[in-house]
Length: 599
Image 1 (cartoon, rainbow, N blue to C red):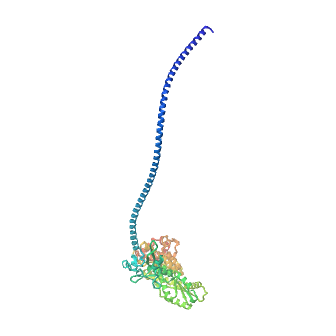
Image 2 (spheres, helix red, strand yellow; image 1 turned 135 degrees about the vertical axis):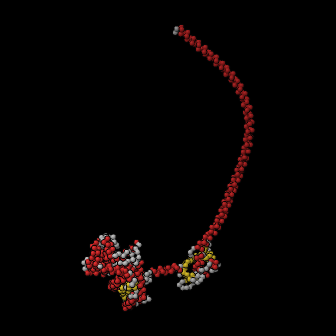
Image 3 (cartoon, one colour; image 1 turned 60 degrees about the horizontal axis):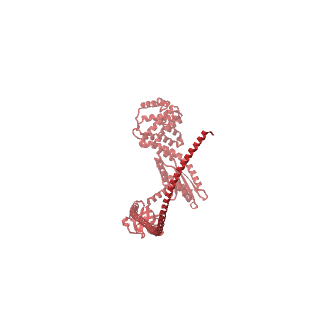
């Protein structure tokens, strides 16, 4: 190492040593300070220790005092705890008493409210009961049935207006008197006192219904049929307090029931028995002790013809007169019934064939005196007799019916023929104008047929059709038939029916059935505008077309209640005008050129 470096190193060590000395000096100074401070601290600590000793002595004394106080506090706390428990017990008792008192107050309040409610309800109930009483009394007074109430001693306490009207007693008169005096009833069959329904109700405590054969004797001794029932008046303990009797006057009802029963077994029109009664009675009569038994069957001839000609009222008259004649010719115990529209039957007991024939003859003699619209009413009869019990009664009926129809085949045809003649006579008797008109139409038809070259039998037939063409007017009322001036629409429709009525009258008899077709069509027009069928052209029978022309000319040139009478020339012009519409052109031409101009 060189000198410089050595010197430098020494200088560095010298500097470090100086620094270390300074540091040591500083440390020593600090130690001295710490030593002084320690001494001071020791003095302070010694003082503090003395003070601590004083304080410890004081503390010990204070602890003793505190211990004594704590003991006193513990005693006071124990006493206080005991007092608190006592107070708590007392408070609990007070709370219980308060709760009980509150509950008692609520109960008292509730009871007072209930009392107030009951008092209010009692007032309302009192009003309701009064209203109900008034309502019940008013109801009882106003109902249609008679009502009588009586107490337990059978004395009347109530009687409504209906009961006053039925019994003839007033409420004032009956107050307090016995119900038996007012409700005086007897058995309608035996005429003895009726069962005591009031006593029966009070004993049984049940509603009782009296028989439907009860008669009430009113105050003025009239007898009235009644229906009635009685019911007990009971209290809440089911003790009988009285009785209420409800009844009504059924006199008219019984009359109606008898009428209904009568009608169920009788024919309303004739008053004879009906088919139902006949069938039931036949079963009862069919016994050995009634042998011999005869059945007579009767059927009115031409009833439909009479109905068609003169109306159903005339037909009804024919049936009534037939019933009258049959009843007059029979014995009082013979069973007579109307079993169909025009059929009658008679049951004869203990009557042989001879007696049966005698009865039929008597009836026929009576029938000869009976007329409707100038026409004699005719009946065809047949009969059969059962002599042995083993014979079937139903076969007896069939034999009698067959016998009747055999007679009817002849008698009915004869009757219809006579009737048609009588109808024509009746129509002509009603209106001489119709007779003149029909005769003229007949003559014109004959003339037209001759000019058209018809055979004689055809000419005769159409001549008869011309005479009969208006026979249906027998069914038209006189006031329409003879009315002056024009017809109303309704009257015209009724008048138009005469063609159909005439057809029905004439078609009922074979001899007239063909001309009936001509009469039906004699108001049909060539162009199809006529009536009643609206036939057109060749659809219309030529005979009817001929009658159409003849009828039109005769009607226009004859005096009539409606329309203007035309001269022959005026009528011809009218036919020409309607040629091809109302009339067949060829027939119209022949009539104008070869018939009317030759008259």
